[in-house]
View 1 (cartoon, one colour):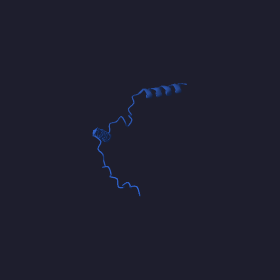
View 2: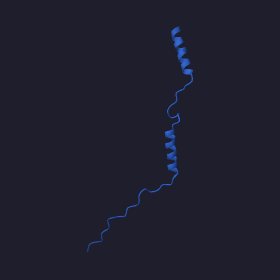
View 3: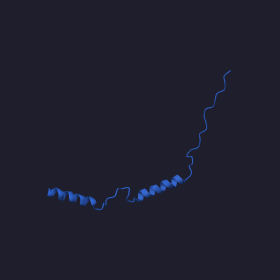
View 4: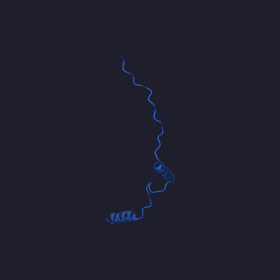
Length: 65
């Protein structure tokens, strides 16, 4: 009984301690920040068509007489 109480108190003390681990999304990343800024800059630019419209190559046939 005494041993289980000591283990329980130890686990509670460890769980109540400060948490120092941080997930990767919390830690600042210079590469991610640069990509994010580039993405935001690209989104703010007006959309420009990348290709010109292609002219039709086939002509409609006239009615045969």
